[in-house]
Image (cartoon, rainbow, N blue to C red; front, top):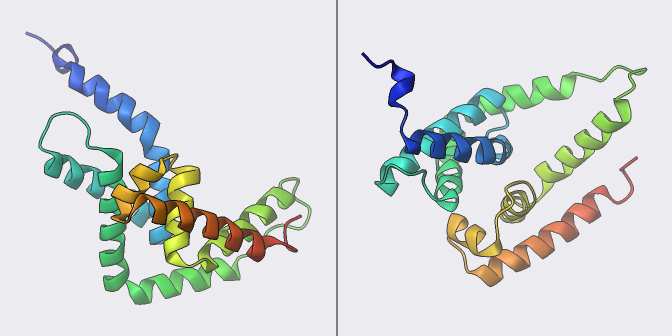
Length: 172
């Protein structure tokens, strides 16, 4: 009798490679929409399964489809969990870093960038996140967000300008 690992098909390794490459990008994108690690992980898992079901092949779904599914599911989640999001945001603001920690400057910079990203207009934040951390092309971003390619490029440019403005005098 064959064990379960003997039955591994090429599609399994294709999925494993796809997940290893794309899971961090998808999770980062989901974090900006969910504001909670557990919800972000759930969004990624549900979006991959849903996008794969809509793709209707054994191969992994197209990355823009997964990003757009995460975005849509995140909107639904935000609508249903509004009060929980407010409580978690308050709790996150109440925690403070240690004063004599060697990584304090890095964490401070990370917090300032995260704060600036959270203050950005959603349409800019989505494009900047997909371009920088998702490593998508403008064509893929236009697919994921259902906007024209030129609109994706201009939103990226405007988003970077807004990010510079928000962090100009605050970064260490």
